[in-house]
Image (tube, rainbow, N blue to C red):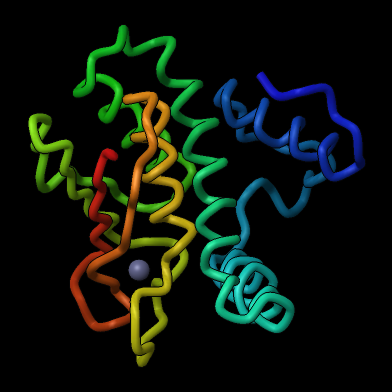
Length: 182
Ligand SMILES: [Zn+2]
């Protein structure tokens, strides 16, 4: 699925993504601590390492990089599910929902499906990135927006614009991702 790894990060990436695709969530070398981590640790990686720290280096370009990372994951998940869903959109989204629940990313719930217009809206309830965060001034789940974009990009094999229009961290009751097929 992925190209032959060239760097150590790419070797690690391949190992991680391959095991997600195979549905293997057990982890070696964690006999005592097990495979789960507190959400706050994930949020350190997401909002600090892949957020504030990237912003230090890239400024306004940070959200685009975060979106791109999420899109990559969405495409990998999409490709993994595509083969089993027989190109049926509902089956595809249903399997993606299951996978996102299993990975504890959030509860994906389609709100709008307009195939003709190529416009979709997906809720991400209990979003892992922004749960327990408030007081922000604009939506902050660019990773999830990218992930949803990647999921649609893979299914429809076209360019996709995905944007978060509601966010838990803004005080909304969900993170809503608006998707536009181009
Ligand atoms: Zn959000």
